Length: 118
Image (tube, rainbow, N blue to C red; front, side):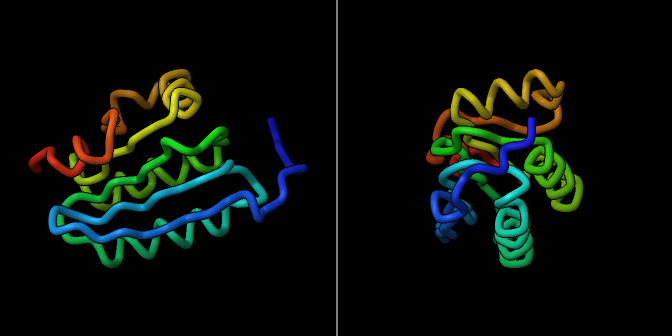
């Protein structure tokens, strides 16, 4: 499903550094309208990560295939176990239906994602 009626202002990202890693917090919907900003934020955290790379999608209501593609690409670049995703229920469902639950490490909270050792 393509969702083009969402105002981009409802989408937001914030990068937060933690001694255990870097957290990318995402709010809103990740779709064709917001893809470029999501991708740019992912590139920034990949370039500046320390240990763990946590993508907090707990406030994301919709994750389209473009968002999934970027997550899988980042996972391949950073290596197994580095990327951890904190999904909302909607995002978890998309990841599971796409058959990526075995590829992407999902954690229920940012704290748990940061606490997992590499």
